[in-house]
Image (cartoon, rainbow, N blue to C red; front, side, top):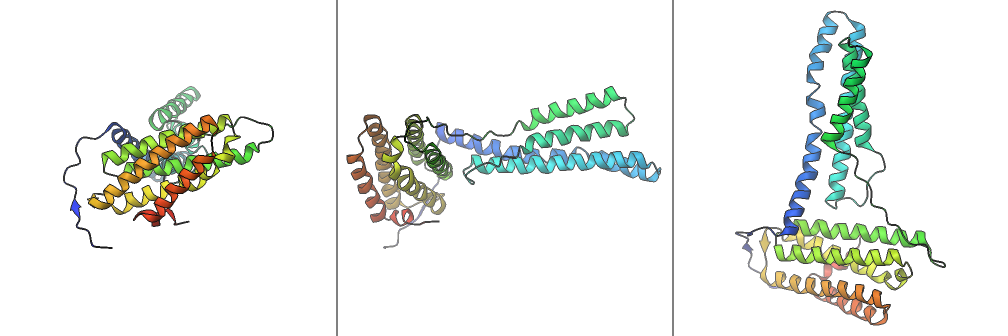
Length: 303
């Protein structure tokens, strides 16, 4: 392949609404991880309190302060781990969320730490409960609740394996999140907008299949081959051409995105019309295009 001259992107211009939303999502996810540092820093005075209790040979107070510190730092570790996992999920870096409610456990640990601190300060039982309640509510307001895992609800239809269809749709949702993450990493506003429209139509298709799981058989190639190829091409483009323009490849990628968007839209229309025969032909043609073009080699990669 002939060497192409590289043109470094100078000005990206104003951000489009999808880019603004993506930037805000990334910033909010990363801020959530950074906020967990508060649970490591705010209890710092307890370190000095434990030293004072040790010097005064007050073992009971030393034990309470030590346990309070352990609770706060344990809460910080839980909040950090939970926020980090949610950030990776939101950014499409991992396919699913752990079912462990780490933020809730962190809130409980914070409340226990506050209660122990109040006991170490010789507060009454009412005061201890107030400290614990304020700490619990403050934690929930500051860190928020655990992100709920979106689950696919498939309509039960006689003769259809609902569990299998649910599994297919959840895998397809993971592929759409990968495309979303790639769109956020691409500097070109046009490509970001096109990929956002593609995933929007893709989610409409998944919703249609969830309402009528009999469509899953006709959409099998779309759910597996086509979504996977689209995700791989978008990810590879985002990884290798971030901040750099290659004119011929950009134009090739633009045309490919146009065909992808048209095929997604046509898939949705055909599912609504229960017409699958000609759609298979179109997907085969577009898959051949993926293999033929300079980006096609990415579609053939498999994990």
